[in-house]
Image (cartoon, rainbow, N blue to C red; front, side, top):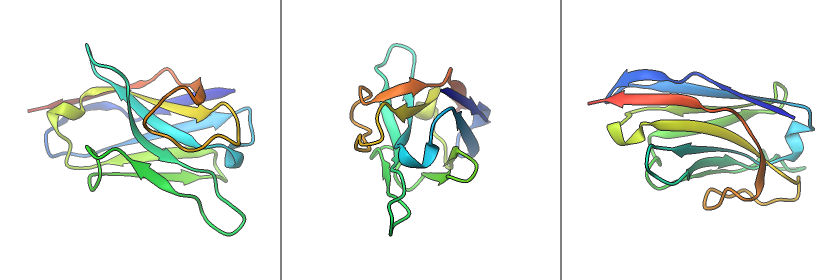
Length: 130
């Protein structure tokens, strides 16, 4: 399984960035996929999780309180991608952002714990200047 992130960079506070995660090597539309981030000296925290689509629903999106209303995740199961549109960025959003795929397709979507996610990318750096 390969997980590859892209789209990080340096932006001024109030600006926007779009991160993209591409996954290969598994049946993408069966797995929850999430974004986590880790700032220097801080613990890794969940940012957003996109559950897999069901028979009659497109799946659900979950967000950390700190990014609700500013960040929007979108998954494209035809392209095996999970994007994260980040608007109104703040200096406290500065971190390495990681995309992660659940170990098991039956796993629930979670942003409160990283243990359920077994496949991780190398990360992409987001730096927001004040």
